[in-house]
Length: 270
Image (cartoon, rainbow, N blue to C red; front, side):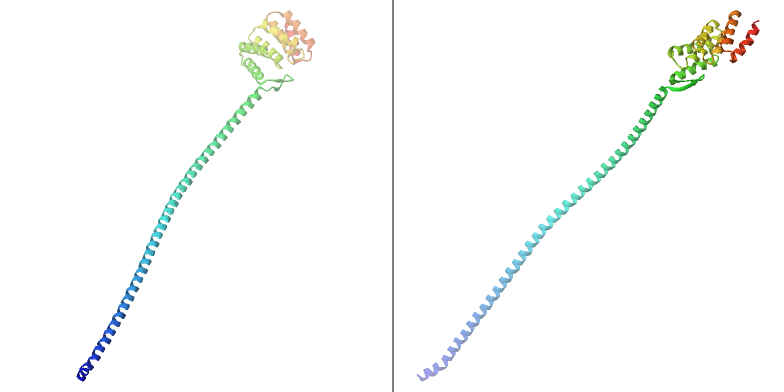
């Protein structure tokens, strides 16, 4: 028994030591396992955190890209809008330039029309002035005569002065028919008689001169008309009639120059 205890005595400690050692190893194993599990837990959390951050970054990148794409689209739209606006501005400038050109052309056209209107008005005024009666003084007599009336009278007398007696007769006779009450009537009658005298148509000249004397006895040329009648009668070889006409001249217009010439003419008839 002693031996058995002796033999068993030292065996208990060994067994006990083994137990302790086993317990220690088990505890260490447990401790190690906990530590490993703790490490594993920490790694998973970190991994999840990293994945979460990565997901957030990727989401942020996606959102940023979407925003960037939106901004790019807006920028492109703005560029197109600016291009369209510039095109519109250029079109407006072109239209404005054309409008200015049109306005300038219209101004030139208006100025040209105004000038033409002014010319036409001046022409009308000129024609009206030519048609309006004008004051004329002839042989001490003042009267109104149309420009055309004055022109025709002047043309007829001009023919007489140029020695165109036959055309002068026609022109003066036409003038009398057209303007029978003209202020030029007495003068036209006197020059008509002289035109007959110039063409040596004495028979026509005598009544033409007599028409002036009878129609306008106070006319300044009435004494000359009587003297011309006497000259026509002398040309027709009728001294008796010529003397009678000269006596009428001396009696009616004794102080006239024609009367002085008539006295000389009477002396030559004796």
